[in-house]
Length: 284
Image (cartoon, rainbow, N blue to C red; front, top):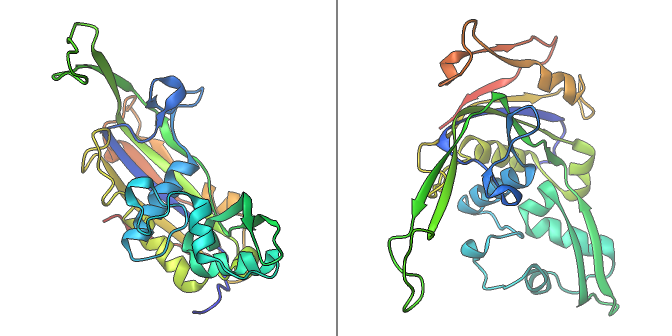
């Protein structure tokens, strides 16, 4: 595997239609929004989907969902203990973890488990900083959130009697175009062993982000990667700051449009950066 040599920045545009892209448990699982009404998807949610896609692609994942557990381990502590053996130092522990799991060498991980022992018999407390960083995604304009009342059709417990109060609520975004921003840092990649091949896997996972991600809140086809902008700088530090690169993709509503219902209601423009041209990838 070849060591990553060039800084990478990326922007992903995601379409959401009649779906809940990321529910807020502190707000009745309503789609997340910020104060100005823009829709939000947390970086943790995006990383979960990336981990799932990488796992589907045959990669070993440390932070596995319970319903996707492949090794029978019931906790992260068990998974770490089963895979990392004879670590002589914190550096050796981190090296083994990065070599074993792509999500550790990509996003980083904190290993802090009481009673877990290394070769010296001490508890494990190791931190790994990952080179792949993600912002929370924000919609390009405020989103409208609809709520739907639902009722139970069967009893949950023996002898339970359904009544008019056995109701629930589903919330969904009518339409939203969300912007995910991210970067890959070469200096941190050198420390974790993140490679050029790993970067290509992250790119493919982003392109197919919502494959096998369907649920009652996100029916198949309700969430779609529309386009990816992928900048590969010509050096380790970057020709421009990540902020300037991310800002170069500008999304605005067309004149006369107040309530967007499709991507066609937006103007998507790309400011040219001298010497830095993105690879533009259409979603699956």
